[in-house]
Every structure is written in C-alpha cells, then in structure tokens.
Image 1 (cartoon, rainbow, N blue to C red):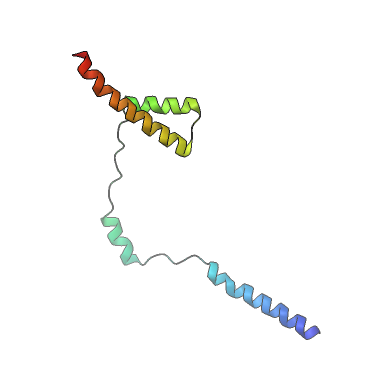
Image 2: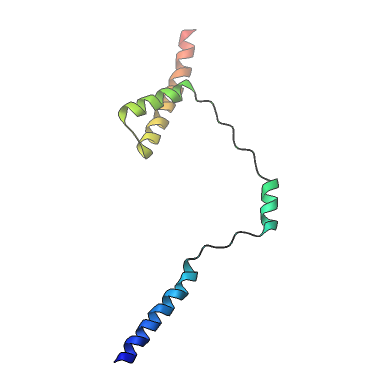
Length: 94
C-alpha cells in the first residue's frame, strides 16, 4: 500500500515539473528579425484635429453618461446628423 502512494506522489511531482515548460514564455525573436522591423518602422500617425461637431457630440455623450459601444454609436449618429445639417444650412443662408 505504501508503494502505491509513493508512486502516485512521484508521478504527481514529475508531472508538475514537466508542465512548467508548457507555461513558459516563448523566446524573443532572432536579432535579424528585429533589425528590419526597426528600419521599416512607420512614424506614429498624426492626430487628426477634432471638429466642432465631434467635440459637441462627445460633450453630449458625456452628459448622457454613455460608454463603450453605446457611446460610439451615439457619437457616430450625432456626427452624421451634424454633418448633414451643416451643408443644408449653408445654401439656406445664401
């Protein structure tokens, strides 16, 4: 009986030691792969200036307490309606 429990303990310990390699992080890529990536790195994109309509829609979304997908959807619809209203108002002013 003592032999079976010793065997079970040894098996459990060995499996724990061997599982460590399965959860190890992968090695960093070779140096030759890193050099071309550094030379072909693109400059960060320039931030687009926010339009007045975009800022106004953001303020409205903040006031409504919208976050995540709801905020994105609201701002998209708001900017479309603000963009569609501006050109329609311009010919009327003439």
